[in-house]
Length: 405
Ligand SMILES: *[C@@H]1O[C@H](CO)[C@@H](O)[C@H](O)[C@H]1NC(C)=O
Ligand SMILES: *[C@@H]1O[C@H](CO)[C@@H](O)[C@H](O)[C@H]1NC(C)=O
Ligand SMILES: *[C@@H]1O[C@H](CO)[C@@H](O)[C@H](O)[C@H]1NC(C)=O
Image 1 (tube, protein in one colour):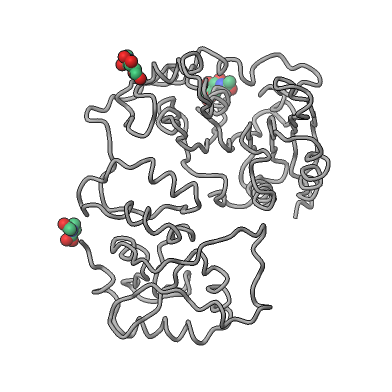
Image 2: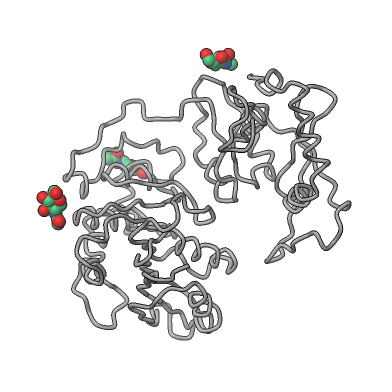
């Protein structure tokens, strides 16, 4: 195993950390309010960095921001974290010294704050042979990710891959062709080939996310290209694009975009869309990449990796709905607003909720962001019976061109 922190952390460097820790009230406050999740690095008399829990009780009550919604969180366990995790996350001194852009002479490579709250899984994930092959542990990694260990720690090993990888079909054939089975490591999924995934809507009783998505000749084929019907929840790509001057919608993001049929439809119109997707019992990311559009492996919890005021369009279908904690949703909608350029479009497609939630929670929430409503359709979802009062909202929202700040 590597012991990077030992050799790269001279005493002086540790001393800076001690000084910073004890001299700054602000830092103490920050550390303490995050203490449920993140161990903080403190220097010991040895020349290694060890991980301890800061004492929460020493901080005045008024310094603590209440966690909302209040969820019982486990205290940081006293389990020692894997040496590879420490090698990655310990402060790493910059070889060229102080960097004014950083305002520091060290780097703290980021991992999700909650990572260390799951020490057993984290240690399993971070135990591997350095310079060797990684364990085939996609499911473990994704569980950590979905629980908030995002970004996952980097590893120094080669990821599992098919023994004989089949290269993708050329564009445009790749857009609508099922990729070769040997482009995927199937370990994490119930299905072990694409034939099984394509047929699972017919053959499989149990629920699965996007169960019929892999069948490119099925429902996927008609999504967003049907005729535009007044008052329908299904907007078409072309009717949405017609809202703006031709050619001005060029780049964008699809959040939770399944197998990225939206991105393919847009690519056919010379528009570049990046699709976030998680591999929920299927190789969504591989499939998207095989089609020839870009998958982004991230959850809805993470800050969008785009700069302010940059994207022309953000789309999301079926993913944003009432399963998401309301506070997180508020942050997420503001983040979408942030990355959209003034005049950019947010296409909220089939947002699902129940009963009074729309009036009570989601309309005020959406109104608070600052979008202009271009289209707004609410429709009842009746397939499980009207008494459940299930409904969808499809909306086309625009970030104001002027005074969007
Ligand atoms: C891995 O490779 C690096 C770079 O060559 C080397 O410094 C390190 O000692 C290797 N680690 C192990 C455990 O083999
Ligand atoms: C695909 O996997 C199923 C089991 O999941 C198996 O029965 C079938 O023979 C496989 N088909 C191909 C073409 O490999
Ligand atoms: C996409 O771009 C190509 C190359 O610039 C052009 O030939 C084609 O007509 C464009 N397609 C559409 C639908 O705009």
